[in-house]
Image (cartoon, rainbow, N blue to C red):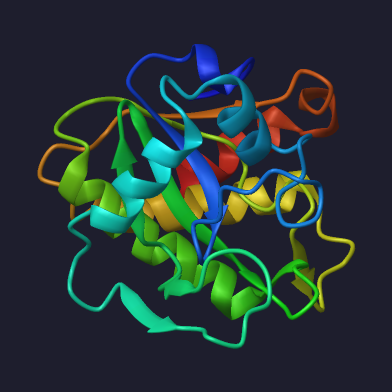
Length: 201
């Protein structure tokens, strides 16, 4: 299902895209306060951010998801995780989505974007426990997809749906997916065209 609305008001599990370090520092340098990531940390945490940090540090990640300790990183956390890695926190799925360069700018190549989505759906498959899952359009915010500067939210939505449908074939009990789009952006998407894509996969 695709709908306009507020991701934080949805039932079930809600996906928040983090960077590959699971940073929580909302300072408009590492994390912008205007992103879903920043809004989640500033306005929707049920406990202090230090508790979230401890939860992430002690989380039982799947083997191979933790990649390395980046000791050269001057700001933010240093433990780097594989794209698509999920950390469950209350009714949220925190997802390692974007790579960060040396200037803390989020960026991805298209192969990395696809890698994230395939890994992400596989992780969702193992943790959703029949609950519905609500997600934004990944990459719709400030993340830059290298070589695809003009890619639209509609294009990203089609890619998201395509990878979900491929992964859904492996779900024992498919999760009910809701893609929540900001009300200011829903008019930019041809929902009839999206329905055609969904039916054709």
